[in-house]
Length: 333
Image (cartoon, rainbow, N blue to C red; front, side, top):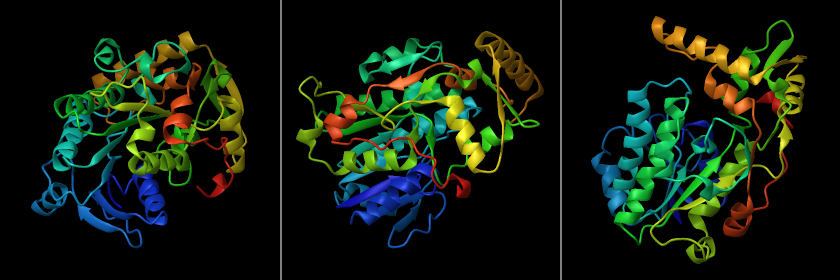
């Protein structure tokens, strides 16, 4: 089976490409940079632009059975225009380039409402067009919801389209260039201040967990993936996470200790953290700051509330019982 993977040089896309190749799939890596993976075919493509004639020819040929769309602008301080161009426009470009392939979209749990806790939240709790009424704290979350709407529109316009949306939360593991570096940078004089002291339960998602889910979504028999309650003109949406929740403070304390950083977790009331984040964001906008402030409302919402997810569909539709959260080897990540 031939599978195309966008964003194959990134953290998640590279893990998916590696797993697919080990499973015996022919892998077409689509990215701005060559992931330099053995036995993986590479074609350069910035998804904000139309594909090259060669990529267009491949997409129209029906040789590609599935495309896993992992490319995205993931910075939580990304500019609105960039986020729309990459996350919404890019998704539309990939769908158009591979009209005959099953479409596996790597979305995000950030599409769920950020203003309060998510407790064992199920996929149907929010979906387009409901997301249009949610007030998101940043352009990343808003455009990930917008990208899901693009996928939904493609299925409605072409009922035979097979589309699966995967919603992971807090992806971690070897190769992470976003989550762990930011946590380490937040440590000051041996202290790490967290909203609510990090005393909340959350499902994390190891990069191997999302890679496994993406590969199964791309290759499993469609009748096994579709459930009796699914609507034919809707994508199948599936939460993806490790088996059981962990306490944020415990998880961060362990991974930092493994990396040789001893920290004392300090508690910042959520309301105070939210207010401080708003002030820092406004100051950053006034000064034209390009990088995210040390504290943002999105970060507070992600760390200060319970974020647990119903994983029944992951087990039933994809046949996956995920592994427990583990930081083994994190000293070398």
